[in-house]
Length: 207
Ligand SMILES: [Zn+2]
Image (cartoon, rainbow, N blue to C red; front, top):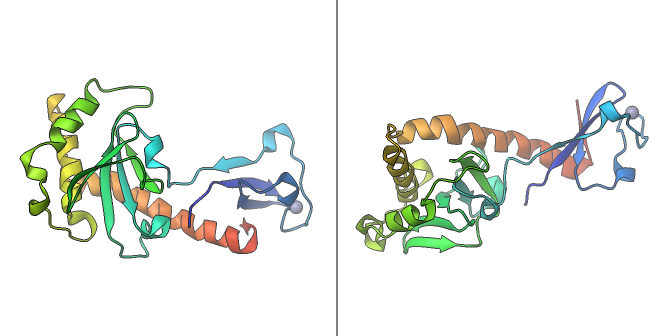
């Protein structure tokens, strides 16, 4: 299942979520059954999916799962795979076949930005290529493990720490990176997934 955006509006004293791609005439208030018209200040708000296309990111840490968005939530114990996007949305990750450079396959990703929007880090792509070419990332050294202990994580975090240190900053531990930057997003996916499923099944969610 691909997670899409939702639309949030208020009517009849309720907060309503519906699919963002629904036609305006299908945006009926579940309380009164009418297709509401909104004044400017009440305009529906788009709620962005916490899962995004990693190939449309640049210089980000990405987490994906072969089970799609469901695999990224807390409820499933799925094998996760992590990688780093370059400035053109090509994702580099360490697998049992060595380092992969992919232009597809990361369409459903949790995205952790590593660079401010609009900012570039000079030589990001060259540094990433150089890091990927190191001896450490050969196929025979790879040992896949579940969750966040896996070798792909070592590759991605190793690159982040190399960039941090090249800027004179302290490296970040796997535990801190995971708890501060990854787990909150996994939780957000789990919560969003529950709402999204409800909207798909019933047409709306209301509270
Ligand atoms: Zn209503």
